[in-house]
Image (cartoon, rainbow over all chains, first blue to last red; front, side, top):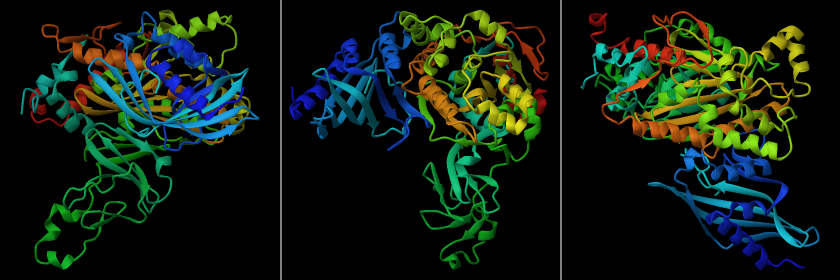
Length: 159
Length: 446
């Protein structure tokens, strides 16, 4: 099977739709086991480990985050938040068929709402994808918020 | 002018031993008085001197509602100046950090000031000849705060010209800060990156009280820490298996009441105190290879061991910071309104210690205290629900009487059961003291 630009772009759109529709278990299945979801705190941050990030989560933390959302005593999710991604067409920055490695760069507006509050974030998501057993998977995802250094209230779902 | 202005009796009556009146959290007049009196009379954290390591480096922040600049002067001392041009009021510095060289220059009319605030030059100065400029407030340069003290890199300021000394204000409570700094083989910390900035629609004191509230973790954080423990078991591990760093950090939040009762709470005079006298949620972190050796080289094996055996959990420095010595974190609860608080969470690098320690510290900060943190989410939910709930009329007092004793004397250092609310009462005792210290009518009230 050979991956086309269209496949990569569809993948990014499908992932955002899973998050918006709350299909989190399906979303977790997209990930490779050693992947990380990184949301830097600083503009153009290079080091995820030795300065603070907003998120730098491995699969254990992502599973925990997703499972918590459905818990009976998850007080900050009573009532539940809802989210919405609006995507620009993703740029395909790297296509390495030999290694089965692909990188996309996508500008998005992300809206999260709960009760009377609604938050709008502008962000750039970089997906590092790998072709494993004929299927595209997320090897790593980096989400840079345009206002990463601003003070936020709760951001509870996944931008 | 309202019920509380220049009325120290009315302010003192808001705190009555076992309970405090809701006005301390919701009343805008009380908030304004806190800014005018409490945050002027107390010693308030400004920043760490590694944020301004070179001459001319500055950092802008606020003490209460007063915008200030922390700057390293040409003599290498740290100065704290009000961030206001004495001419028209323009904030001199607007960046969060920067280097201003040898002087500040106001961007509006180019009045310039040395980094200790002294007026350096005014363009077209002849226009002021014969106008009596030397008598004007504006000619005295940028105003400095009342007093500044740098304790092993941590810079505190008192806005008031007169008042309690740094040593008397903090006393033996500095042992927590000292332990945090001693954990560096070089005896020195350096700030690591920018702080998390987390906005809360609640009163600043709720956050400070929560730092020594040991009866909430297993309840409010069951959704995160409890789920983590459950997933860990489903993966086939037991309590005693070695845990990855994330589990080491989050699992202890689910410790039973007994664990928190036995950890102990210590209170010091002037509203300071800490949880984790005997052990804490930080006690069982795994050893980082090479660290103990590096520390022993500096201090000798015995003292190095003693430094690491001290595992204080949260130390509150009244009025508005908390530090975690074992993981080199400092959180500052910046009051913006009666119902609005900005929390900034800083982390520090232990100079000459292995980087793995800093990695754990950074992980703790983002996992527990970020606006994206699954632990922080439930804390913020509780504070904001309380801020709204406190508007209920007919139930106007907040209860702080767990393990209350008659005739508590907050001027003496005490160690108590780890679930006592004595530290919250200690904070309110100090709150009355520093709120009313400079109020008119104070003498009449005594």
